Length: 448
Ligand code: JSK
Image (cartoon, rainbow, N blue to C red; front, side, top):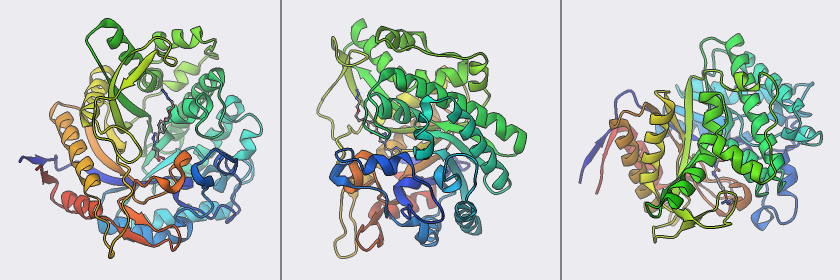
């Protein structure tokens, strides 16, 4: 047994995203997003699930804010649905959409909860997709206008902004692997999309500097950690590339002002090329205030000829998995954080997502999700080790407040600290909710 104690300044939170929880897709003048289209396309989402109702947080936000307040966190990380604000992506603004987020943010502030707001958590207005979406450089300008409006509207209320959540998912998973909206399977499109999102990120940072000198801004890439199966140069290189696809590809442009040559070379071999315009890299590499890190999983990997873009394959070493099939790999969390700190310097880091999928159901009003508590503890130990090693960790935000629409997995995969019954929409706090509440009340916990 050991006592794991966090610094007193450490801040804690819980996260959600608009399309995953809000529902009310036809209310308040909201326009369609690419996830409305994708989820209604047969075969794209498990069981034909979609976000029409989701957790109904559009109507139940006050109940959700009360739950967050009871949890006792400092931060609530949520996202704004771009098509609630600009139903057609650009031009006319929906006042009802703005009003909804003002009600939510005011309810948070009323309870002393700091809002952390993500601008792009994957729900692009369908009207923009109809004009090419993120493949089209005009979307950069549309995003900048949307971001600037949000900065003006919420100045003094929202002091933490995240431009893009998991740009790897929004570019490669969505446009090369075809698993998320809009569902393309073309590496050139994915590379263009990734680059345009990076430019849009930089433009939004520049807009914030003009509008609000007090507020902080960052982005939240998703990370994985692949540990080489052996110490052969082939396995080591394969893992560097696999990790670099998530980390270097998205971090180097922002922190170093260039793309990583090894990965550019692999794309080139696959006939996908970077198209840069003058000034793009200066825009992308604007200084940011903090980095968000999302981490869920990792594992052991090795070189395998012709295995995907990076000729890398995961090896099942018999580790435990969560219910979504992802390896539980807390050492990878420690390795990602120390690697980022060593490579990119002392930037303040918020863990913007970490959590686990376990599909426990209520029995007599209780959801006994001991495995989620165990996952949390093991990742908080890894986080604590990273802090002790000098990584500049400012906060930890658990994914997720609620069970919700888990994208291509629909409602079948539950990540919440709070259970949602999708028929009655009743919320039930899980044992992990009470564990987290108790832990952050104390700022320490005991391992067992
Ligand atoms: C969870 C990553 C944001 C928040 C959470 C899903 C994810 C994923 C999911 C990779 C992936 C699937 C599957 C198949 C093919 C490529 C959300 N985070 N979340 N984060 N990441 N194979 N390649 N070798 O809901 O909204 O890939 O991959």
